Image (tube, rainbow, N blue to C red):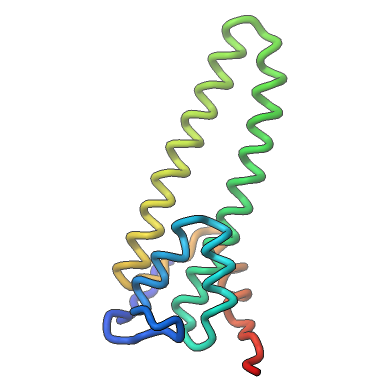
Length: 133
């Protein structure tokens, strides 16, 4: 689901335009996602992208671990097992890279592109505004 937003005119509490902060929240995956989730106090747009960055990163890390284990199991099968493991790793790696670029691009364009599965969780997490002291 894509929600249009006009972030180019609004500055987040980080001092960056919302679209830039939203895109930057994906750059280093969970690191920048958590950073922007903690630092951003006002912008639901930035908080959503930061939360989605964390959620997508966790899913990708778990998927990477599963692929590593599967690759080790498939390595027992001569040649074919190694090729299947390599193909799976390349497909998931390329897919992850394309998704990463698309998420940054959509955030920069001002769109709240909610990914199936993790998007709803990210939206709930983004609504939990930290206390300002």
